Amino acid sequence: MTETDRLLWVRRMGWATLATNIGIIVTGGAVRLSGSGLGCPTWPRCTSESFTPYGAADLHSLIEFGNRMLTFVLVAVAIGTYLAARRTGRADLTRLALVLGLGIPAQALIGGVTVLTNLNPWVVSLHMVPSLAIVCLAVLFLRRVDHAAPVVRRGAVVRLAWLVFAVAWVVFYVGTLVTGAGPHAGDAEAPRNGLDTLEMSQLHADLVFLLVGLTVGLFYALRATGASPGAHRAAHALLGIQVAQAAIGFVQYFGGLPVLVVGLHMLGTGLTAAAVTWLLVEVREESVPAVVPAEPVLTD
View 1 (tube, helix red, strand yellow):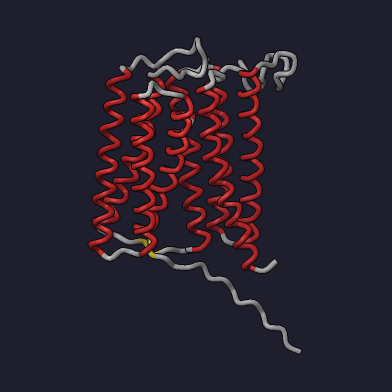
View 2 (cartoon, rainbow, N blue to C red; view 1 turned 45 degrees about the vertical axis):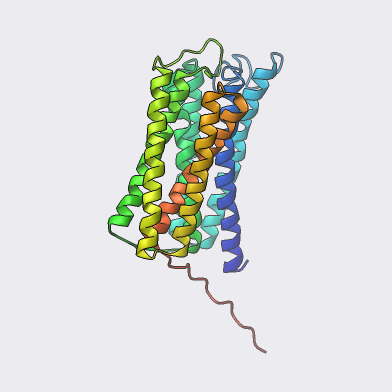
């Protein structure tokens, strides 16, 4: 296998890591929105007698068990990504792939604690955090495949990009608290966090407006400073996702939180995490392409 083939393979695995971890955010949301959070009432077993819902299966247990089985898909993709990174001989990709892989059991462990605490809303609010972190790292991994040993920029624009990234993460977490105060508990008997739904929704909306405003400011700062085409594309992508996500958020709030719309909002959260990371690395780093050794020329 040539060096070009190795980079192609590791790039494909990086995209698979990104796609599957955004996917698990959506399927995890489906578990909660369908009221199936305790479809398997214990962990790591599904029931006290079995790792599967066999003999006690209903729709809720099948949905929850199916989501658990997707963890093995994530593990397979993580192992494939690590092996592909190792084959490139690059320590930076190998380290990132290892961290990506370790995020999977961390996410599964929090999921287990979530079930064992009967969907404690404060634990549930942490359940999506590892998946979002893996999404961000997957974007960085993809960046490193083609841009090794980047030159790091400094200055006000970079600091603004970091601020956009930080505020986005505050928006993500407050969003989980809004869900923890609302009706979608994951089970009819699961407790709520006791926060005022209207106040938390208003706080979340205010933070979203702040995030969009900062992103617009960064967009024009990039134009004024003659940033790279990649940074401009990333800014356009993030703004587009933010507008769509805000529209979905308003529809779900004023429409009484219909489950399909809430599911779309969770997909938007994963895409926002990816886009805000892409923008940060494009602004922060100068593009230094990875060096691919020339193929030897065979002569007679």
